[in-house]
Length: 117
Image 1 (tube, rainbow, N blue to C red):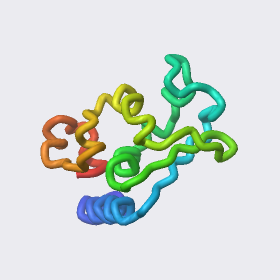
Image 2 (cartoon, rainbow, N blue to C red):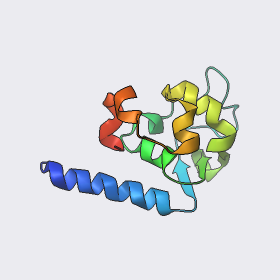
Image 3 (cartoon, one colour):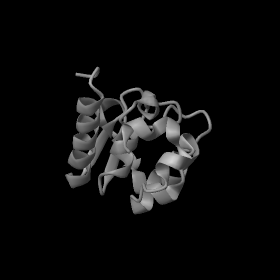
Image 4 (cartoon, rainbow, N blue to C red):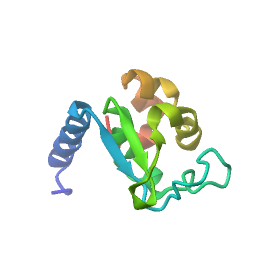
């Protein structure tokens, strides 16, 4: 029930725990052409709908490993190989991704806190 802030908060926290406890998270970016260079300025990876989803941040920060798959479930890379690009796209410091320490996150990104903090 999204009208209940307590229920919504519990659901968000539960999802974060699920992602954190997962050994691997696969992000399906069906609108991305896995054959193109994701680092290209005009790449579909940079424009992927996934980066605007509310749960994107949890899926990036919580799991130990994230693999990105494009259209046809073809692998694009992992967050480790794409970290600098992801930082460029999201404008979120690499330290949040590499340490998982979110203690200062709410002050730095209040617009994103509903999705993870």
